[in-house]
Image (cartoon, one colour):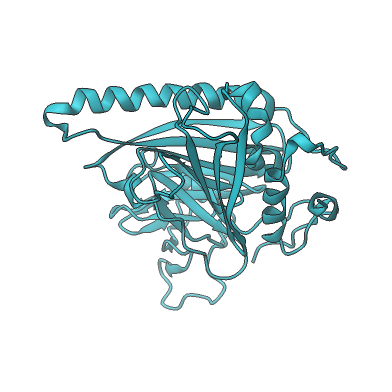
Length: 338
């Protein structure tokens, strides 16, 4: 069982980014730290991913550093105890009966849109937002982006996607933008960003003129470029997949990748498809690095000083964020005030 969380360490329920899928090979075990806990992240020989506490329940060996993959199991290098992907001990050399307490705390994992995600929270995992398009290599080019560490907690990093008032200054938006909420209840938050004025002008140098943001948890989101107000969730031309994960209370990992729809079959258009995807990769990278310059050192204030130009988007996000925490922090009530 996991130790009791303090008020400050309570994180929202949802899916969290663990690693780019292509950065974890079959048979590989790597050490990772999420939410101040050390885990062993591994991929079995069949390609399944597992995540479990790195400290072996037997004698405390570090499974992430001395463990190895044998078939579908993670094997401790000290006494050769074997664990399946859920953390259950399935074999102890020389023992016919496995003690009931023999097992590792694990977390549900899945792979979507080219990333490995893990579930944190009570109850069964919620469905991940539909991203079938991002896994269709026949029709989309999917490229991993970058991972950065911010010296702050999760909230400032996660909410910046919903902070529209910083776009004109940081992301060169060419006109004021409007926040249009589409769903905001339970574990769902989805909204559209569009020009505040009528017309079909660009919001930025690339995106025209609508953006659909779907959050599959407070720390993971899919941002789709749209050509009209009608949501196109299944086959967008372009999508950015964003994820953030607390390493500890004062350090948060954040990452991005993109999926770009091909303009035609790879033969004979492979160079064109690739060049278009690489061009958009650099566009997102420039925007990501511009944000990181600020997010890296941000600290949330106890009483935010809201002004009219902030709009409702950040406050809606904070309500969504705190709604996923069973024990909201002391500033939650202040964040919920209109």
